[in-house]
Structures are given as structure tokens and as C-alpha cells.
Image (cartoon, rainbow, N blue to C red; front, side, top):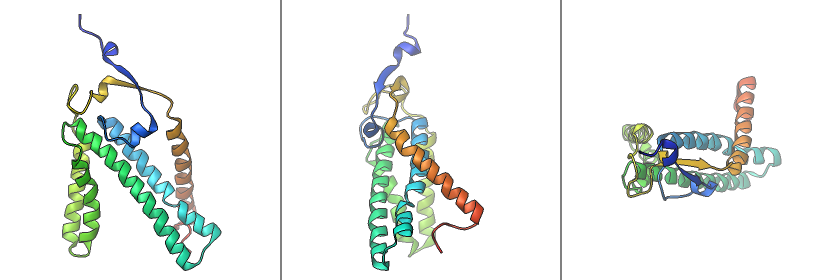
Length: 192
């Protein structure tokens, strides 16, 4: 008698670090999409933290520039590393080498560099990046185990993910506050 789906599932506890900062294993389409949306929300919300800091505490023009450059630079490096980890594991789910994710992360940076030379090249690179994202989002992963690990659909993830909730809810509330401010004042905050 073949095992049922419940008997095939593997219970696994996954930590926040394994969820966002790991290159090993695989990630399914649904988890990839949800983590991508989650990170976009965080990116929008927490990118304004240095702007809020400057607005409320004020610094001179030089200090403002340095503070913005350093804080946004650190934030973008962390964001790119997380996206690299997630893309890496998604490529592995498709039984492709994870280092292809480096190319996917580098394409937007190349598009920015080529924008000064030719907008057509820049737009072409953006379309290539969107096509890769669509492929990663829509292509079904390898059924069963592959050389990168077990099928993520056969795993049952257990745990409360308190760290994720602790980061998500302030970002969500900050995003709602900024969007409400923009709707009510019909302007962008902190630019006047």
C-alpha cells in the first residue's frame, strides 16, 4: 500500500536565517512569490527610515548626504543579498545551478549603467530581468528530490516565525502611514 501524502510530508523547523539568508536547499513558487512581496514591502517601508531620521533630527547638508548614502547603501546591500539567496534557491528548485542568480541580481545594476549610454539597452535589460522573474515565478520546480535537496512541496514547515512578524508588522504599518499621508496631502512626505 503506497504512503499517503500526510505520511510523505517531512516536518521541518526553519529559522529566519534559513528562510532568508541561506544558499542551500530549494524554494517553491508560492514561497518565492510570498517572500518577494514581503521583501518589496520591507524595502518600501524601511527605505524611508533614514529620511525620517534626517527630517526629525536634522543635520547639515554634508552630514545628511553621508547619512543617506551610508544607510541606503547598507540597506541596498542587505536587500540584494536576500534577493540573491532567494533566487539562488529558486534556481536550485528548477535543477539549475544557483550561481545563475548572480546574473539575475546584476542585470538591474547593468541597466542603470547602460541608461546613460542607451535607453534601449537599458529597457532591454529590464525586460530580460522581468522575463527571468516570470520564469522563476511560474515554472514548476523539479518533482521529487534533485541534487540540491528534497522537494519543498513535500516538507511541512513548522514554527511561529516571530522574527518575521516582528519585522513585517512595523513595515506594514509604516507603509500604510506613508500611503495615507500621500493620499491625504496629495504629496510626497518630507520633500518640502
